[in-house]
Amino acid sequence: MQIINARLRQRPELFSIYIDKGRFSKIEVQESTQVASDNAIDAGGNLICAPFVEPHIHLDAALTAGEPEWNQSGTLFEGIERWRQRKPMLNEEDIRRRVLSTIELLVQNGVQAIRTHADTTDPTLIGVRTLCALRDELKDKIDLQVVAFPQDGMLSYPNGLKLMEEALEIGADVVGGIPHFEYTRELGEKSVKLIIELAQKYDRLVDVHCDEIDDPNSRFLEFLAHEALLHDMGSKVTASHTTAMHSYDNAYCSKLFRLLKNSGINFISCPTESIHLQGRFDTYPKRRGVTRVKELREANINVCLGQDSIFDPWYSLGNGKLLRTLDYAMHICQMMGYQDYARALDMITDNSARTMCLKNYGIQEGNAANFILLEGQDDYSVLRKQGEVLLSVRRGEIIMQRQPSQVITPPWITQATK
Image (tube, rainbow, N blue to C red; front, side, top):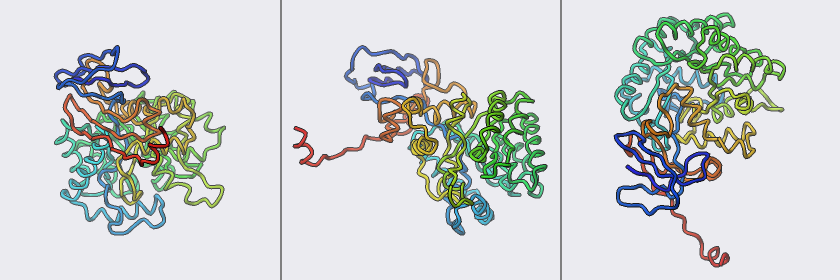
C-alpha cells in the first residue's frame, strides 16, 4: 500500500507513505503534488494521524439509557442507582449486542484502541466475562483493555474485594477503584492501597475513578499519587475524572501538582460527562466541575480525554466522536489560544496511548501501519471544521472508509463571488 499527498502532524510538507507486510516501511517528503496511480491512495493534502484512542468508556452500560428508568436528576448518584436497576437484566447476549454496536460506532469515527470499565459489583461478573471474551475475539481488529471496576465500592459492596480478585483471575487488564464512593474516608484510603497491591500481585495497570465529585475535601488523588510514587508505578497508574480538583483552592493545588508531577501518573478527563454531571448542587455561581486539564498540560503532566458514556444512565447522548469530546474540552477548559490548538489532537491520540501503555504506537518507520486520514491539514483545521475520519487503516488493511460529503452551493453565492 502507498499513500501519497499526505500531511503529517506538525509538518507543512506533503508526504508519501509506504506500507509493507502491515508496517510502515518508508515515509518520505514529496517535492510536489503527485498524481495517484492504481495502487496508491491519494490523501488529497489531508492529515494522516495516528489512530484515535478511547481511554475511558463503559461499554457494559452503553445503549441502556432509560432501561428501566431515565436519570431524571442528571446526577452521578442517580445514574449509579439507575444502573443498579439495570444490572439484573444483564446477560451475555445483551452485553455482546450493545458492546459490538458501540465498538462499530467508535471504529467508524477513527478509534482503534479502547479501555473499557466493567462493573465488578455484580456477583455473576457477567460484564467482565463477556468483555474479556470479546477482547480476545477482536484482538486482531482492535486493542481492547478491560478495567475491573467496582462501581458500588470495592470495600462497601458485599464481597467486593473477592469479586475484584476473581475479575483479575478471569483476565481483566486493569485494576479499577472508586475511593470517594466508599462509605468512609478510611475505607477509601484502604481501597487505594489494595488497588496498588492487587496491581503488583497480578502485574496489571491501574485506573481509578478518583474524586469524581464537587467536594473540595475529597482528596484521594494525593493518596493515589503518593502510593504510585512510593511503589514506582506512576506510568502504569491513571486517575480518571478528578473533578474535585475544580473545587480545590490554588494554594492546595500548587502543593498537589508537585506530587502529581513527581509521581508520573496519568490523567483522563471526560469533559462532556463532567460538564453534565457536576455542579448539580450549585445554584450560582455554578462550577464547571471539570478537572484542571489546561493546568495539567502546562505542567507537562500526561492528560487525555475520553467519552465515558454513550447513551447510558449517566449520559444519554454520545455519538462515538472523540473530536466532539476534544471540542468540548477546548471550550470548557478555556484552551482557545493558537498554541492550544496546535497540539490539540495529542489528547485523543498520543497522550491516550501513553496512558494505556500501548506499544509501537505512532506513524514511524517500523511501527505497525495503524493510522487514520482526517479531513483537514493540521490539528487546528481538523478541530475547527470537526473534520470527518475519511479512512482508517490497521496493520496495512482498510477497516473503514468514508467519502467526503458533497455540498451544493446555491447559485446566488457562486454568482456573487465571480
